[in-house]
Image 1 (cartoon, rainbow, N blue to C red):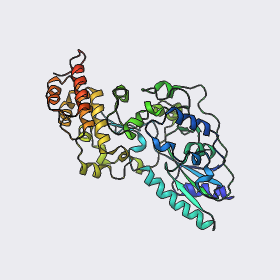
Image 2: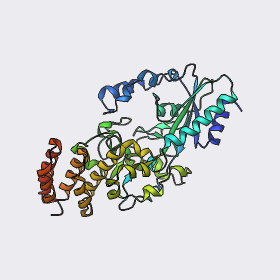
Image 3: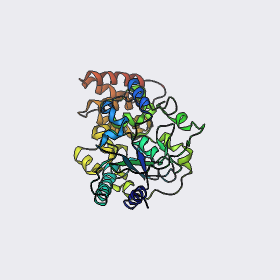
Image 4: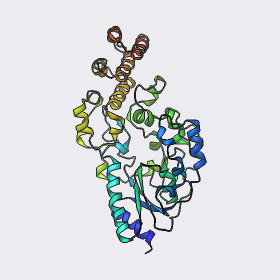
Amino acid sequence: MDRAETLVRWASEAGFDRAGIASLEPIERGELLRRWLERGDHAGMAWMEQRSAERVEPRRILEGAKSALCVAVQYAPLAGAVEAEGDLWPRVARYAHGRDYHNLMGKRLRKLAKRIRQAFPGSETRAYVDTGPVLERELAARAGLGVQGKNTCLLSREGSFFLLGEIFTTLDLAPSEPLADLCGRCTRCLDACPTGALPEPYRLDANRCISYWTIEHRGAIPEEMRQGIGEWVFGCDVCQEVCPWNIRRQSPAEQPDLHLPPQRAELDLAGLLALDEESYRERFRGSAMQRARREGLRRNAALVMGNRRDPRYREPLTEALEDDDPALRAQAAWSLGRLGARSVLAGARERETDPAVAEELDRALQVAAEPFSTGT
């Protein structure tokens, strides 16, 4: 068994579902990254502009690096993956249901990297999990873990519900065989995106992406994006849910640490909106959902309440109008407008001193007067 096969086997023993070896020549799609940034498709994620040279020239990541051991963890099939998402449970991207994958995979990678260094004295390693200036999907495609789908996710015959990591090494390893195209003429992901974030194959415009607005963005969400976000409180899986390769996958993912734990499974939208700082830290400790922060999750819960237009949410939204966070008050106003809560909105408008929230309340009052609204 050669060194490449040995490292792939060790990756399997470390708990990774798939592994392969990538060479470290400059990234062929480097020009596409440059154009993506120039168009502003990265929205408010300014960190994508940093260390761009290392992103397209992966040898710069580690002095003397010659190869990368790329790994993947399958986190959910489509079948049975939404059993926890009942009538009240907020929709959350499947990768964030359980333990933070950065911590889970990072620990495994560090142990694996140590094993490599011990077995090959003098070699150096550096591990990443969705961190650092690494174009993970490009390297994973080189390593034969999948190919880029038209929704920009890495796609294999096992679907696209998997997480990526890599270990850069100074070992010179034989690269794995890449896969061929799996999308063909299919455009289901592009057609299904509710906000038009996939304007053309292989291009994601984060300015229209539900995951960007519900996770990365701070402050109020623009009004033109709110209805398209639908019932997503954190992230979005729509473009993956419609993919034929995910629909065909029926076997469950064997990663129990990534399953939804009881302390979050019991949270409905009202419970999420009412989270104080202590409860937030307790329930979301070690969760990838911390990326959105407490204020982002509460804002998103208020938004989804407006999209559901359920009278049950009038009381918690009314309480949110008294919150210290202006972004939450603005979002609650929008949602109460869709519930037709004119008297509540009018009272809040008299008390509001923040100009931006006051404008939101004025618009909500106009919406509340429209015939399609519910409530009184």
